Image 1 (cartoon, rainbow, N blue to C red):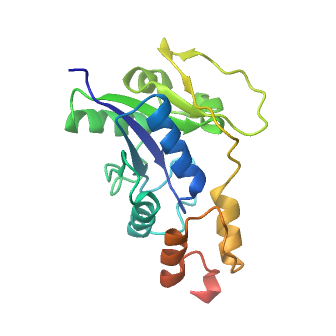
Image 2: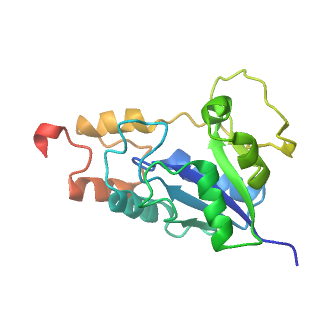
Length: 198
């Protein structure tokens, strides 16, 4: 019996949106992965100001976004560990579930910035990369990294950014890129409002 393949999709998910879910679906179907795990960060290493929404809020929004989606799940491995790096995440997952073949899912902007990551070659050896292309990018698509294959996801362009969504929410808008169930949580809990409105 071949080992289970699990995609690891880390990020702040602040808030989760439809493109996040679509990338996870593509990784599940195209790699293919038996499962794709969203791994919300306690604090995003690459984002010095950290998430605007709390950890439990972001987990609850993820649960709402992927409800009924086969093969998509959430791991709390990074919660409670601010600043944990991607390699540390995969090593901890491997310690918890030895024998799984891991894949690390990321956007092309992250892939293009691997020189700023902690030991990216070791990360690739433990969890070969799965990359969602960035809209309009003409960058070179490496077929391998650190001797491991790089899988490039295919499908219609996805041009959604959490930053713009947070700004829209602060203006009182209801962005279509956010699933209705997630918008419900945001509105009930008053998330992403201007500081003076909280």
